[in-house]
Image 1 (tube, helix red, strand yellow):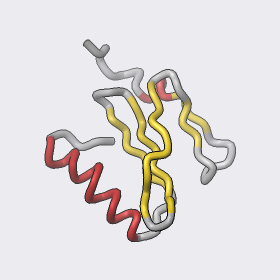
Image 2: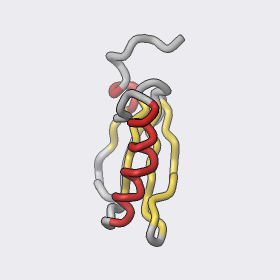
Image 3: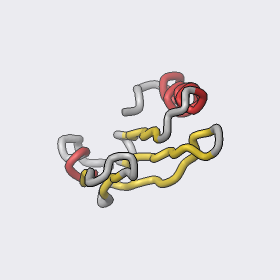
Length: 83
């Protein structure tokens, strides 16, 4: 989940992604609660690159978690309606 605040968000999107890529992480999800979306980054060579952006009507799944699927509208259900 994105941390609130511009500096924290930049840390989540840039610094953490780069660190995780250096450490060999195969997949990194960023949950943006304000936009009600999930950005899925997957390993490509030595980096984590954006593979998909999923919206509230989508389900998130991963080849790393066979059989797992989660409907994103359930994840965002308790948030106040967007303007």
